[in-house]
Length: 153
Image 1 (spheres, rainbow, N blue to C red):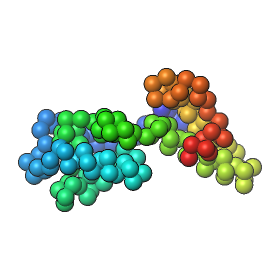
Image 2 (image 1 turned 60 degrees about the vertical axis):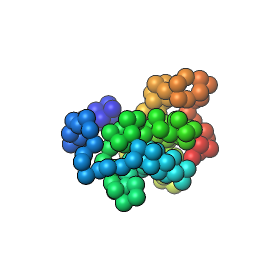
Image 3 (image 1 turned 45 degrees about the vertical axis):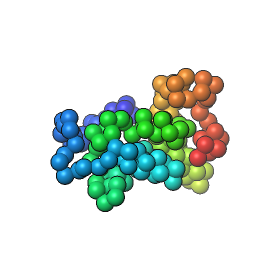
Image 4 (image 1 turned 180 degrees about the vertical axis):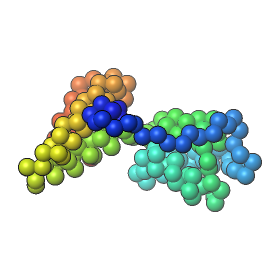
């Protein structure tokens, strides 16, 4: 969705190397990784934050470069198995947080036309994502509004 509301190109980043086995220096027990993932989720961390913490801090001092290689499961699959998955998908939640911040900014600065457009674009992205997730990860009756976003956050 990089070019939908701007003339800029999308952002590119480095790709992870294709690997089938975890590196030799990372000999982490799969059960210990799963326990740490659930523990971090219960502390309120999002899936991306959990991945960063496992990469930086690791499990028992050993970093985990890739949860899928260490456990043969995706991080979100581990969270679903232990009923620790977030109520709303992370990308949708992040967009709603941004929309709430922009709306509060617009209440304080009603003549800020640039951020008014940014709010409109963000809310448009939210509505499209809700349509995409409707039925699977979001209720069928869910519709986005500022009040519902504020209640969720």
